[in-house]
Image 1 (cartoon, rainbow, N blue to C red):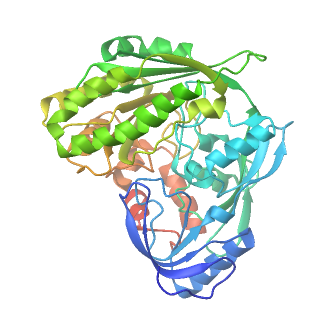
Image 2: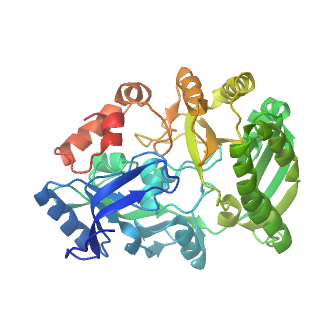
Length: 447
């Protein structure tokens, strides 16, 4: 960090070098501010406007794209955290936007509540997760953005708007998944459910068998997903299902949790990825061993403890959503590419399914969707893998996850999002000077 600077509200500095969690994006910021209240957010946005600076809010920096990058003022929302109210009768919780999901999960649990669905990472802030379209898995469950009931947003002119389906409905529809392009969200009201347990069954299988029965498994389980190990026919399947009320918790024994999640999935995985980076030819053998190292296990625990997996190994990721029926075709084309090219892939490929929703820029807008995500270790060159996957995705009408690596622009995205121009119309109305723009948004939304 460079010189400190007197500022409005929270602590402010200037000329800061910043990079995201994965190291895929970096920037030199004109200034950083940590507002402690909505009023301070208003002051920061107004001040930036007077100085002609662009503004972006940042949560955990877990997006792999440049969605939150700015050369102007970065608002770090880490001081805007916590649940402000819970209405169990209505099934709603109002939460400050900077609240990390792992903090939110614990606070909701203390009130006997839970989010109905989660992804497998909980480091993101609530605003960051909903603003980029974070989702979990489950044919009857939508992503986090679709669970938003209301929100408060600071616009470019410094005004604060309360939005809901009946109050400023178009701004609400756009801002539920707004990419930070419309303003700074300060508070979100989300739907919650009574706390529940999940019974988890994780077991290895063959890719051929899993694809043959994928539709049946998706329909028979509350949550079904699997991880394919490239250069092999091996997958790890995960089936998570709600249990009847009164079922006792039977979490993993501490030794098993440490062995599988801490040692094998993190420490050993870090070492094997470093080895694969130095010796790519060893990758095929490493994957063969890794795909058999995690044996079957079953346990019953609080929902958020089952949904979430500790991810300490840093990586790059690209994820695309497709019509549900495209799962096998896309994955088999990807396998054919991997088998016919001399690029070694040490990370498993993640496959999930989610319900359709009505969020304008959601990857699951009006269609049941399958998701396929590819990863590479952060120290490895990106190579041709992500480009090849994107080419396959485009051929199947894929929609890229807004927070994960892709190269699509507004011309392509307009063709796969029926409400794309409706979103742009709201953006033109609330941010005509593009106070919240950046190069990524200029590419995916247009100038």
